[in-house]
Amino acid sequence: MKMKTRKTIAKRVVITKTGKLLKRHGGQDHFNSRDSGKITRKKRRDQTVSKAYVKNLKQLMPNS
Image (cartoon, rainbow, N blue to C red):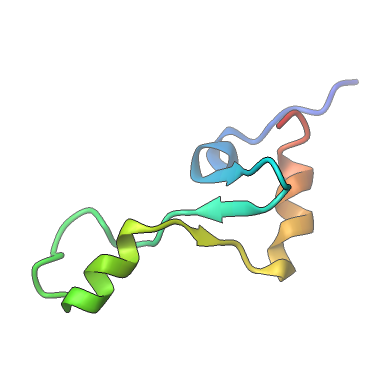
């Protein structure tokens, strides 16, 4: 039987061409005016997923 992709994970994580996993910073929706400029700039970039989670996340996205 075919493995199905977990859509909740696939929407939040992107696999790059080299195999790295990228995710967005949390807390971007609202209340951003109270954050310092350093935090606001940091939230603009995607963040690499920790090595501890890579294996599990790739198993949840077999067709990606």
